[in-house]
Structure formats: C-alpha cells, structure tokens
Image 1 (tube, rainbow, N blue to C red):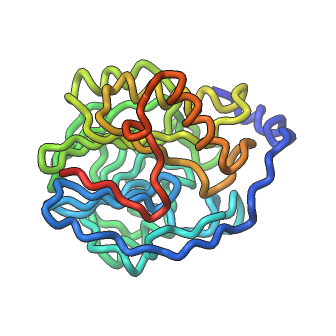
Image 2: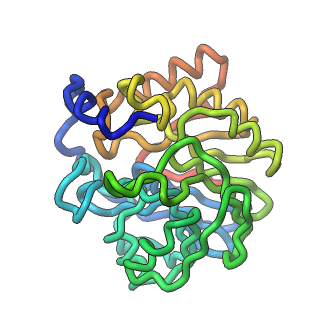
Length: 294
C-alpha cells in the first residue's frame, strides 16, 4: 500500500482526459415482481438491490464531488442513474468503508431523514455514520453475520484501507458483503485489490449467483495495484468466486485515476476473451439498468 508521501508523484502522472459531463436521463427502478432480487446500477459503487424483505443500497453516493464538504475532490461526470426522489423505501444501507466516494455523509444524512434505514458497516465506522443523523448502525468484523438486518448479510474481507484524512489511516475497517435474497447469494466487493480472499468467500459462504466487482480506478499500477483491481484481476476474482454471473462497477462516474473513461470496458472485454469467459458471465450493464435474479 502506497504511503501518503507517494500522492504528489501520483498527481503528476499523465491523465487521459474525460468528458466534463455525460447527460443521460435518469431511470426508474423496475418492479421486483416475483424475482428473488432486482439489482440496479445507479453509478460508481451504488446499487439498489430490491428484495422481498426490503430494499438495500450499497455505498450510496449522490453528491456532486467525492471529497470533503462536497467542495473538493473528483467531480461527477454522470448523475446518479436513479434520481434520489425515485428511490423506493430503503430498509438497509451497506457501507463498505469510509472513503469519500463510498461513504458520502451528505447522502447518508438524506437517507436517514427520508427512510430511517439500518446501516451495516465494518468496525469503527459507526461514529461517522451516526454523525449524519442515522439512528440504527450495526458494525461487523470480517465473516460476522448481521443481527439487525431483514435478510442474511455477512461482512467479507477486502484488500484495501480506510482514511478520511492523513491522520486516521486504518482506524476503521473495510470490507465487502454477501447478501442472501430468496436463496440467491449476491456478493458486493466494495473496494479491493486482488488477493486470495475471493476463493475464501466462495468456500466459506457457498456458491455466488451474482458478484458486483470493481473494474475501474486502477492506473497507474505502481500506485493503485495494492488497493484496486484492474479488469484482468477482476476476471480472476470472478473465477475464484466461481460466480454464476458478475457485473462490473466502480467506473465511468468519477475520474479518480489516470485511465480513460472507457478503458475499463475495453480492458474487461480483452481479459474476458483471454480467459474464454462468455460475455453473459461477466459484463457491465448500463447506468440505470437492472439484473433480475429469478
């Protein structure tokens, strides 16, 4: 993991220019009907997961910037694909770690006031979450099961780190989640580098029906390899998990690193071909599009 002293060097790396804004009309999430779960990609690491036992949001991020006070940090290129006022009632928030692009206190506060959901998060994040007005927070260690959620949820390891600034590095835990809805297992990886942990998730928690895996924010590798997977590593993670289906995330929303906006999609296609993975097994979906698990 690179120290903060490496950040100035990173800032001088040549960056591929992204468009200033991509305007796409927001979409309404589809009805769940009789599906075990409907998973809708809102953007970056934010998914709406509709289940019979309640609706879930992962790492909700509706702010314009991924940084302190919504004033500094990377600016959104795409608006959230489901408008905030079109969200159905949210029962559970899964908060993987405290980085600004995954833990946006403004959005969490808005959700607290509108829905009063339960937040499930790794150890050490409760004080930050409660500062938003959220009343119900459950912290978990790796491999622990949530006790307050309406669906089975387990916190899984990730190879990453936590920090809101230079003085609080790794004082809170980070992780991913496995959710069971209607007998289907959904794995949300959060932020992670590649590591042997994916095989452990499969062995300990059973077959994964749908994995949500990060594929963006990976260049330059000298800086990012210890915290973010690239698409080839995400394909290996998919194989380690023996996932029936995987969906790429963590791309095309905020320019956090140096690769171009479409480079993760091209690299995923190349990596998939090299490993003879059918498109239907590991793909991306459009912003605002959904996957139905029967």
